[in-house]
Structure formats: C-alpha cells, structure tokens
Image (cartoon, rainbow, N blue to C red; front, side):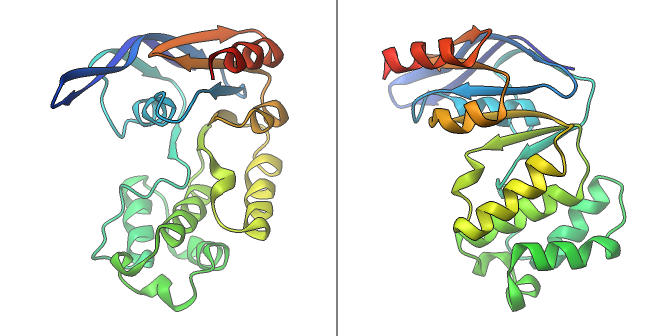
Length: 216
C-alpha cells in the first residue's frame, strides 16, 4: 500500500510561494493500476517525484509498505561524470542487488552501443531516458511510477517498453500520469485528475475523463 495523507507541495518563486499540490489524499493497493490526468504543469510529475522520494513534500506524510520505483525514464539521479555502466553498478549497490548478471540486459535494451561505457554527460536526453528505463527493469519493484513513458524513443523502442513493463510485469501496481487519456484507459482501472492543485478522484475512467475534458 502507498498512502498519501494531506500532502502539500509548494515552491518558492520571485512572486512568492506557489502551491502545486494542495492537501492531496490518495492511496494505491498492491497490484492496482491508477491513472492521473492533468494538463501540462498541473503537478503530475511533481506528485510522482514525491511518491518516489526524489523530492520531499512541504507538509503531509507518505507511507510506503511496498517498494516503489523512481519515475520511469527519469535520469535525475545519475552522475554525469560516470559511465552508463558505472551508474548501473552504483544503483545496484544502492538497492543491494548484484550487477554483473544485469549488464547484458541493460546494455542490449538501452541500445547505447559504445556510449554505455562513456560518461553520461555526453548523452542526449533520449539516451539518458533509455538507460533509466532499462535499469528500472532490472531492479524489481512492487509499484512502478510511469511518467509519459511512451514518449521515450521511437515506435520500435516504445513497443519494447510496452512488452517489458505491461506484459512481463502486469501483476505490479502502477501509477501512470498523462495528459493523453488513451494511455490511462488502456492500462488503468480508475483515474484521478489534478486541477488547480486539487486532487479529484473518480471510480471510473470515463467520469474522470469527462471532468478532465471540462477543465482543459
């Protein structure tokens, strides 16, 4: 179970504090797949970063009784001076798992070629995203956080991601954020909408989509 209780997230701006998320209450059970809709800039990605622990909330509590991934394709935790391979080794040590048996999969799946052994500061954003996704697949999580993952790579790479995540790991919990409802409709059983910092929960996707449509 993942439980968010009265979560608030504010950022300091030149015009004062800006509230991105305002008293969010939300939970996800083991194996449940939940979609979150919202316009660009509504706070969807911020919410995933809070759930993953990449950022702390301004106030409120997040309780995790299952292991949670970082947002898939998010490479913000990588060290640019290290190679892709060295970053894989570092992450495996952090999560207490072996490395050598995971190198062939990550090297093949990420399609980095010789750049797998080059410093990550030489990578494009797409290369970083492909490596982040590949590493996410070799660290076993109970819940995957998915932030517009279909935007990673071309159509062929997208198909690989779909098979690896949604077919091979179909029993895991997932939180999928998107502003494209067909992604939510395809993979989720219920959906919520973030609008003006508020979190609106719905028991079915059609009702959530109707609400989302009325606000865009």
